[in-house]
Length: 132
Image 1 (cartoon, rainbow, N blue to C red):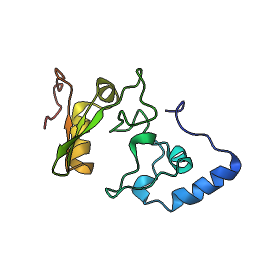
Image 2: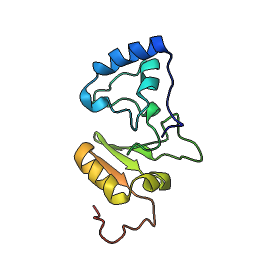
Image 3: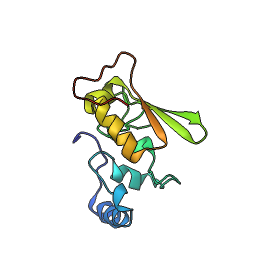
Image 4: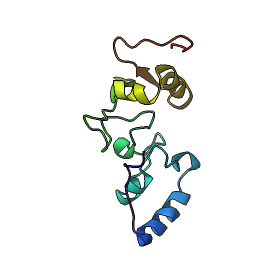
């Protein structure tokens, strides 16, 4: 997602690399998250071990309306509080262009076990995909 992401000058890049090296390894991925933007925005790891949605790139599995990269051309899904410390992610058609429904389901089973993914009305899993 080369057109997205924060660019840093040499001084800030050095500080960023130091900051990034101190993050837990599962938060160091730059492929689907604007870590440089998170660094410049002083983003903090939440109690659930996640950084805020603000810096998720459109190719992130849970790219959402909370991202600064959410636009009419790249509409993210929406997190909804389902109560009792449970969350539901209502995937957008754009999310499904990036990741098939079965792949999202697998991701949620592995990385978001206390959350559910909700696919758009009318979305059909194709032959060979597993449903939830």
